[in-house]
Image (cartoon, rainbow, N blue to C red):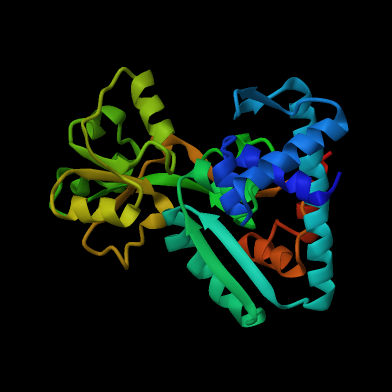
Length: 314
């Protein structure tokens, strides 16, 4: 057996058992992948894949166990390469950050300039997507870390740590009735009051939207959500043109920048949420990744991150 066979098996699983796609990703031929897998199965004396004719349909029970071993082996092979890179080029390399639009727009601008100043030779890339997509990017090593509020902590194979806590804010135009509330009245704002108006808020996969739906449903209230978006700036735009009131992450509202809108904190209605950072369990992290994580949150020290990453992989 050899690493090439391991790569072929792993990529076939990643490509939903499509040998043609696996071959394309590995820059080889489909017959070559198929032959290598069959030779590997013969060497092991077990069938890794279930087949229907020549088509692979899924993993057998022993195949599932083999795939888990291959994942561990390939993770350690990748770690060896990273160790080599770390000691050969300590301050050079790449860092791919998978993040939601909210984190890209409102959190990372506070961190990236300082990181770039300290590590000018590290190439940064942002990859945006839904929280589920971000988790997959990290698990498949298409990104080094992921930043999101939803899903990450529930994803097997990820080590996640809290970055910051936040609450939702309702945004309205200055001429809206809710803008006239006193600060004490705003703190008593109810779900029923919000439901009197059309609502613009996040898509169901983003930024605490599931909590918003659940809390309204628990009160038997059916809000009129007239527009969903993944981007707080889009939500604010449509609030500004009079489509309705907006419910956004508090971090996305700045009274100086958003002077055309009035913000009303509604943590008392929708609770406190936690944005988390996730990395693949068991991976070797370059020194500059540890620095980046600590820039995100001072609590993310090297010791804390190492314990989470290595502890989760056991």
